[in-house]
Image (tube, rainbow, N blue to C red; front, side, top):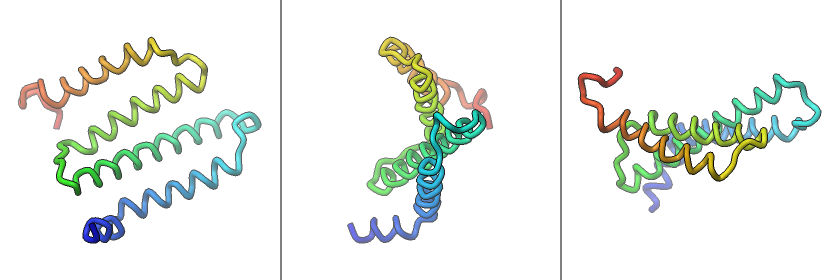
Amino acid sequence: MYKIALTLVKNSVMYRLLLLITVDFIFFGSTSATKVTSYLVIVGFVLWALSVYAIIYYALVVIKMYGLPIKNKRRLTSYLTILFSGFFALQSIGELSTKDILVIMPIAIIGYAYINYFRSDSQQIT
């Protein structure tokens, strides 16, 4: 357990994650979504998406340290970030319902499986 903790501390991903969380606290703590202009709402959404990307990526790094090999870590992280950001955007404008989740999730899983596992090697994007 000590070796894993030491590896996590030495990992530069953790420092980037902590920096991003600090920037999140400063940005979201100093603004109010009801009082700022629209471009700051967009900046906040992008900052939120970057934070989600970093958290998912760091979680996959930790999972890999415990022995679960994950192929295409960045692709999986990007895919999950886009999925969660889409849900977040729909929820923030009041358009997310249970039906949306029940439709989008299976399509997203099938799409990810198709992109990563079912296409032949000659068709893969390099």
